[in-house]
Amino acid sequence: MLQQQKQSINPRTAFITDLRQWLLECRKHGKKIILGGDFNERITPKAPLMKILLDPILQLVDILRPLDEQQVSTSLSGKHRIDFLFISHKITSAVERYGYNKFNQIKNTDHWGLYINFDTHKLFGKGENTLLQHETRSIKGKDPTKVKLHVNALWTYLSNQNNWQKHEQLM
Image (cartoon, rainbow, N blue to C red; front, side, top):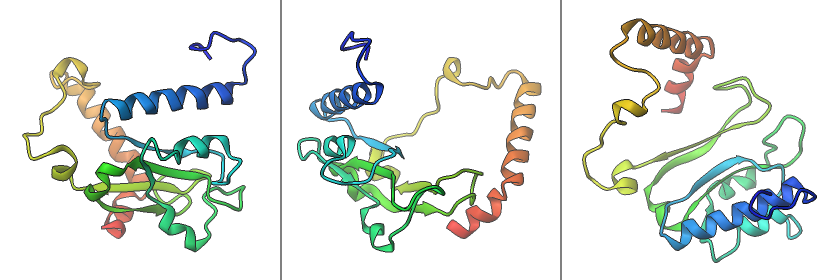
């Protein structure tokens, strides 16, 4: 909407236009794209967002498409798959596993969770993995009180969600 400088434009239409422009820029510069979420649309010839995401120019792959044979509804209120995970064609060889978690398996939600595991060496190369610069981290290691609070809160949240058991089932 801001790019088009129109206040009367439909927000969804503006989002789709902006997303297409951004994806084209990413493609032009050889960026690796991983785009997933609740798109509130099925893959049909008239679905405006899907037309863009499946445009051959972008070379995106609907990585979850093979699971369509299961005829799953990915939201509690729907009958169809509206949650998608698109990736650049050039990184498909780095995908190790992908799929859905059932409702409320990891977190309480009205959608199935999406997951994708990558071989990080294939995705990023075999270079050394470095941590974020200290200034950009949300938790500073010099404040042990905040670190302990954060770790305890995260542990409690993950434990309450049965995360450790669910993680073992996924592995």
